[in-house]
Length: 410
View (tube, rainbow, N blue to C red):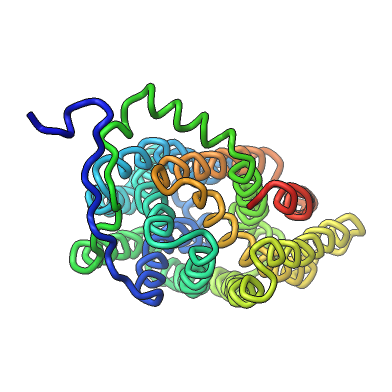
């Protein structure tokens, strides 16, 4: 009888792979980088595909919201599967589905089909992101994991910086469908890298990870951890502001402020540059002040960005600089909160990192989905709803960073 078939018996632990910080950061950047590739690259195409497919602004926003909702739900599935079957099988399956879904989006005949393929894309993207966060816990203790995650997110920032300008140029030259063709190529390249180079990192598979009763018990245990709640709220709030920028910025900059797709891409690339600076500052501040100290300092930049954007909009200043300057400040703060929060959320759970990563990712994605649905209703001829949305999430992020993280997180 197979010992793994007996209740209460776990698979034998395998030796941990020896991966350098640099290699691990590259692998994480490629996996996590698929998220901005899925969102940022096609941002300049949103107004174009809206006209091409004769869709409403709400329909165009749904292409983003459907991806995010499926991304959140998908993590609840892939996380436990990764704890049971291992990281590599989940990555290989998810990346193959992601590539196929991106091809489907490129040839979608109408907005309904595009939304459906984007949902499949989001569900499969969840495999890459949830496993990437779990790999950090497989290999490192939380403090070291936060530093490696900051290094990986520096690479992600470079990918995000290239996305909007490249997407704008491709959309202008070849149309929005070519952008999704490039997304499919990125998925195929990442799949090849995982198949060729990335080893299995799960030390001890849990054969019971996908059983419903133990799974729900694990989720309840995770939700009762105060530091998990603090870090998950921090990540969800800071991403709430970023998603408001991602989902609404193309309409604000292009439709309301008159930028071309190419110029808009450069504007978004500059914001990604400030996110990169934030990840670099994060690594330095973690070393000097600890993770909580880094978050405390980053919250000041986040609040400054959100308050400035909302204040300028309320006083009637509607100009590119009045949106871009606050966006730079917000993105710098986001570059500090994101690596600390992602590593902190899975830190207390070395045996169930996949489930913890999935639960944190679901909360984040649900937040983003609600924001996307709201933006589809309120975006019109004014910058004010967009600016107030960023201001709200900046305030929420700062309050969580200055209170819950400082008091509850270990």
